Image 1 (tube, rainbow, N blue to C red):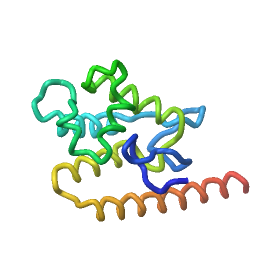
Image 2: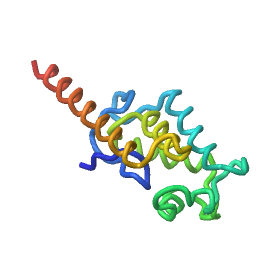
Image 3: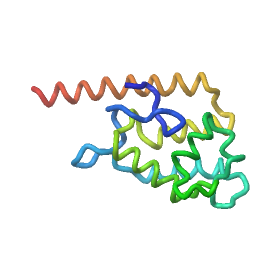
Image 4: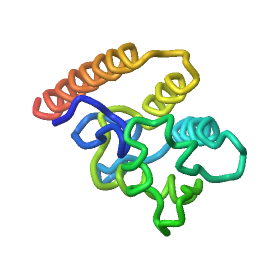
Length: 144
């Protein structure tokens, strides 16, 4: 499984630990997740139009994938509703390696110039390892 954790432009598949899981094992969003995703969306929506256009998404790695995956009505704009629907669909299909809040707080820091790509990658790898250790510990405890 991939060690990166994010959405569309950064792989999100895997069996890592999110912040909360419901009884089905799917990722359940927290208020902190919602807040960090909203912060990320607001950073991209530089003209405060309520949607992200292709020029605004150009800040992202792989902006074409972003639009292909998120722009449900193919109108060239990704609305908040389209973006969150896509994220929730992805997180219900496969649990991310780390919390949505962690992912988007770090991506926001990258977009704002508070982190560089190398630091971001290092932080994600560290979080992945921490979550894998915690997951193994929980599985071991469940067996005992």
